[in-house]
Length: 263
Ligand SMILES: C[S@@+](CC[C@H](N)C(=O)[O-])C[C@H]1O[C@@H](n2cnc3c(N)ncnc32)[C@H](O)[C@@H]1O
Image 1 (cartoon, rainbow, N blue to C red):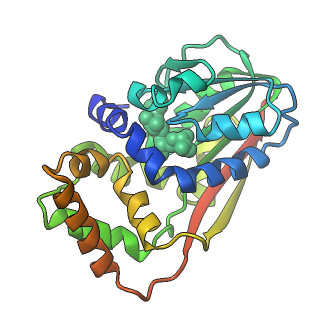
Image 2 (spheres, protein in one colour):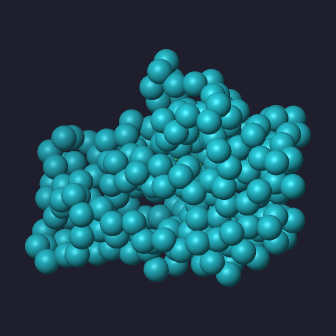
């Protein structure tokens, strides 16, 4: 992960919990439920853990032990006192021995890699034979009008996408954004994966929650939080709400879920 991307995520921890977490917590539960092995009592790794969505899902599903790893220490330090052990580390060179875990879950993290097959191979390396790996990514049709509304409100105030985010969109995300692409990455990594496209509805989210989701993401949060006054931030939210208008569909996220047994 580039230093700029890690810094942006590190500056995002609490903003994430006030917006995106509502969505990512539920998605992590779905990814954990898709694992092809029992996780009862299992030793597990939350890879690209962020603020711990998959950690919580793994513990709730009966994991015996969770270790979190992420390149952005600011995400790991969020609520650190109430989370299992966390380690700073890169998905491409995990600081763990071969076969150290029964199960590895990478929720929306390997889609940051320009070589996701290398990330999958590394996830498989630290998984013991007989264990399993699950990873998720955004599908290429994952969209909602709130994305454009928030970007327009940010852009009107001088925000521009940073190079790390452009690289993520152009060079990384597409490589896991379809069933075929994810299947190809798994094959390159030497994994026999089952890959699924899934739509996950969020009918309970109102405009305020949708805007908080977008403003809490790493590509936006440092700029939004860096605005001079609370009034500036409130005006941006109001502007985004006006641009979104009143006739928008309920959010439905399109995701790719990849799961594989480690032979
Ligand atoms: C979209 S967030 C998802 C966080 C969490 N898994 C969740 O579902 O809420 C992506 C996370 O992956 C981490 N990440 C991205 N690239 C990484 C890499 N190469 N190594 C380790 N962590 C990485 C980011 O720092 C960030 O915390």
